[in-house]
Length: 377
Image (tube, rainbow, N blue to C red; front, side, top):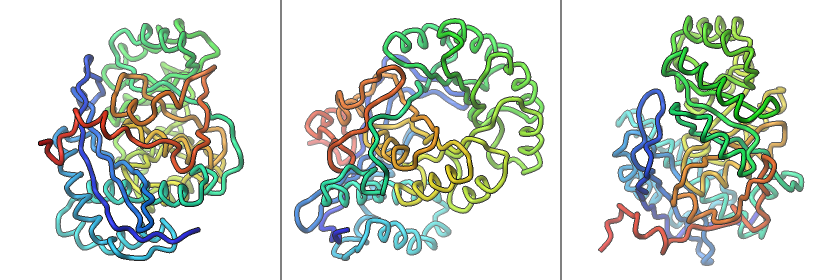
């Protein structure tokens, strides 16, 4: 792998207005923020990354400014591989995490820089990112439609089915009776062969989660995601896993060694790390490989912009296994002005990009109208 010597690392924050708010159990999305990171090498090559910034609503601009600050540490260094940047930044910023308490924003910025480094490294090799990671040639990966609101979700699912989707995830955690009614309506709308899953976003107690899982068993869900709080005592998670007829899923809110524990036990059957929340490509590929080797499903979490869905796709393609790619079907220029027409859905699958690196780069000019930081002049 060719060495990297960054001469520029800069970040940009964007906010895309949306017509219909997107509801989850802990809040409502009223716009779609996105933080992109661009790394430029001494030979002129560039790579793009993305840092998670969905919550709190004001967090995008903070993360963009933080990425610029943290990125300065790498300017002028010679990196023999992209994972070297991840390891060095993680070690160097341990005290800053303690000093500021900003474990999330700092981890997310490091992830965004790491994705950009890997995109850059793969482009310098003229390889698709998943091939640079050692993945075998692959034509396509399966996807599932996500972010489905609890308001008449069967209509949204039926429309996505007509577009080529064959797997769907409903937002639950609002009220068990309402959630079960919605899932039954979705099952009727998309048929018995379609994949159905649900995500409670940590909203339920153990007792409510067990009641829901037993009630949902006849609907044939492939997983029950983040049913209870991520930091609930291990005994609570074990009790839920033992009682639930539906496999449990989670991982978007785990970091580092927490994944080792999750892979070693049998509570979570589906692992869902988010490439922009922690680890970037470096950390997530390790998790993906270990999860697949342990017989679990690796289904990367995604609800962001175009760079993060491409990064997630390449990780899934490289890791193999039986996982699905989370696919946001809501209109979002922050995704569309990166991906374009690169990922058409056909019979529940999307093609793996063949271009170098991520396979696409942001339309910076097109995104300009949505930029909030640096301020537009």
